[in-house]
Amino acid sequence: MKITNVEVFPLTSQRPTLKVGHPIHPSWWGYDQTLIRVETESGISGWGCSGVRWEMVDAIKKVLWPHLIGQDALQPEAVTERLHQWTFWYGRGGGITSYIGAVDQALWDILGKHTGLSISRLFGGRYTEELKPYASMLFSWPVDEMVRNLESGLERNFRAFKLGWGTFGRERNLKHDEELVATARKTIGDGCDLMVDPGGSDVFWHGDLKWATEAARMLKGYNVRWFEEPLRADDIEGYKRLRDASPVHIATGEVIRGRLNFTPFIENRACDILQPDQTICGGLSESRKIWQAAYDANIQVVMHGWNTAVGAAADLQLSASMPNGMYLEYWHPAPYVSGILANPLLLNDNGMLPIPDGPGLGIEIDVDALRAHAAGADDFGA
Ligand SMILES: [Mg+2]
Image 1 (cartoon, rainbow, N blue to C red):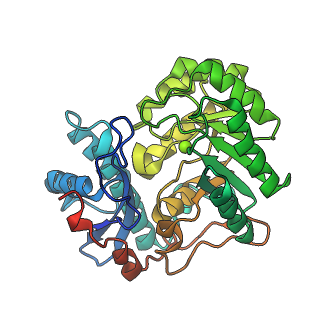
Image 2: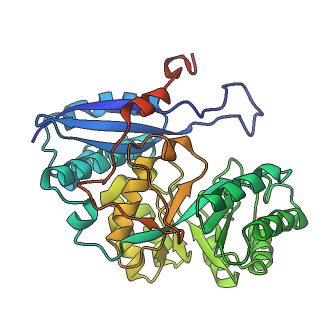
């Protein structure tokens, strides 16, 4: 079944207005989401999500066109591994890896639709039928908006929450950080899971090992489930030391690309929880290998998923197929997650999310709703 086309769907409706911002912290620095639809001669198509802006996806699509068009859509891993190999001299990371990851998701979706099986079954079977989704949102100061978002998450049955970025760790004032976390814990109560993510992949992140160690001890008092990216993303030795010193679990990995770049984190036991992002690290095939290596080293895995319904569906399928799948990151509130599906992902009364078992990713995209998020795409950056 030959691949005949790749259609690019920009997601631009949530982009901040482009302006020349602060020299260190510009208003926008390019992290974005783009969906692709891989089409075949049989009429079956599949969806993938790339964690880079659409202009880059469109350019990479043209560069890789001769390597992809005409390939067999029913061989996801063989096709995408060839793309990794053929782009060795200019790929091995960045937008190239993110694009190949989206193609990989789409090809697994196609293989599932062709065989009538969900991707989790194609991966060997399902260890669970549901995951605990955590509502992933930002800190705010003053806290009003954060409290409103937490309350709206509770109303949607979320029983786990992750708060990130904002002013946490940026005021160089642990009392301020504690006030944010205390407010969050008070709002959601003791019965919900709470995670904290300062965002160490922010530009010129300054949080160091001593700050992170003190913050981790503070977080223990609020029964925080994990402390995410408190250090800069590549500081493997720092993460190793922090993991040894911290009373709460340490999580990291969202910006790492390619399975070989995860190896030192796994071999050095540099975290308790590894967080590959399919839309960044290389899709389902690559994430599956990373997860297996982490599992064998007794490191937990929770996929990072600050992206779209396509990314969430891919995370659900992969997590179901691994023996220790626990959580799903569910960006909330987020129109790219809740607003582009004809069959929305809904939590049950216990705050759990049933994992789709339909063919492929098990979702149906509302293409009209999707196109509505591309408004103004051609004007951006002109
Ligand atoms: Mg994070």
